[in-house]
Image (tube, rainbow over all chains, first blue to last red; front, side, top):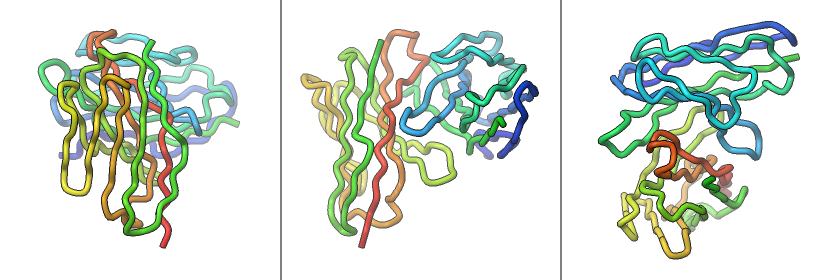
Length: 114
Length: 113
């Protein structure tokens, strides 16, 4: 099993450009998440999808959109990138209800907006 | 909402024990987790503890939970240079339907000879 995979690994954007970060999991998990990690601030939840067909806002959703394409894939879109969105983005998945709710993380996408 | 706090930095000598501390605010949190992040990598689950437990041991790792004080700790015995990483505490509060973990800011552990 590959676990949680993310593409791309690195990306540089100019202000105003758009891009989509891709995430896929092969663990048949119900729930998927997008976080951003900034120095000294830990992980902040952007959006999550508790199950296929549902998405909900997290702590910092402004400037982002998400799509739960199917049970495996959950993408994050930046419509008009801003320097404040320079960060490391992590996708995670979780079995969901009935388990211990732990989350499994991808390797991250390092995004720089100039 | 739930708040999770950790000290940001800990330095220990190789071979000593490390103790990383975490406090949280929601006493109804059901599961509590420790994750490890090595440089340039994602977070890796180290261990978790259920709220009805006081202690959990897994090889060199010992997790202690004090529910009264809302305090969680991770002890790493015989700390090695490979343990140098950022350690995140996370809790699962019932609010949000058990779908969201709340993370602390992370403690950077530096192990020196």
